[in-house]
Amino acid sequence: MTDLNLMGAKFSQTDGGGEFSTLEGSCPVAKMRGYFREVTAYTHGAGTLGCVPYGYFPCCCEDEVIEKIGYNFESDVENSADSIFCSHGAGYLVKWNEVTEKMHIKVDNRDENRDAVTEAEINSFKQRAATDKELMEIFERTYGKINRSERVAMRRDKQTEKIPKLPAPKRGPEFLLVDGYNIIFSWEELAAVAKQDLDAARARLINILCNYQGFKQNNVILVFDAYKVKSDRETEKYGNLTVVYTKEAETADMFIEKAAHRLTAENRVRVASSDGTEQFIILGAGAVRVSARELKLEVDEVERSIREILENMH
Figure (cartoon, helix red, strand yellow):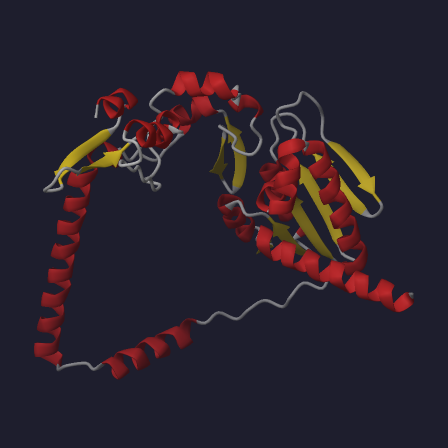
């Protein structure tokens, strides 16, 4: 119990009714690593320690952990501290220390009083449910009971009336816009390479998409974030693959959004990214969203087809 207190744990004791008892609670992982060996040693194997994930909480020793791992959030491309805000249909970058000042949505501090908020929400839901039930009873007393099949038929009729006429599909060439770093860190194979060498992971993705583009005969534009580097936008060609490195203060999201708006006027455009916000924005531009997983399935199918063609040629 003394050890746990020193670790900053929160726990309670349960009387086992004999010479053994149980302690249950939560403790920061950073403080508890390897502690099961000490428990086993000083109890001579009679004591056991079992742990399961409990959740995420504020770090108990933030400065110590950050100093130990040498973390620099300014250079963390995978988990950027900055945010993308949307204004008039376009996204723009907001630095981490300016978010609170520029945000227009009230911060929800429910974690500070989680139990009270949850109970209030439950009570509110119960009140709404009771009101809905009373209204339905009044309606049925006045107009008669409506069975489920009638309600479904009414809903279908209403939906049929509101079905809009779909526009004709665009006949121009197909463009595929790919958020490079998002795909790298979403694909396990590339993420593992990126942990050792980000340049190698980037080169690997470029080679993969070169083959993909050559087989599919579409226009692939691969976009990499370079917004933290003081430079202008750079565009390079690898075969028929276009690789774009964004300019200073321009994220890949921003470039892809602008390109999607420009290209969808006359062309079929798809955007490959697992960024939920980015997917939502490009839908408004008329582009089709493709998740990182869906793109991986397409790439794998293309590679299988290429292997079959080569085998048949030999």
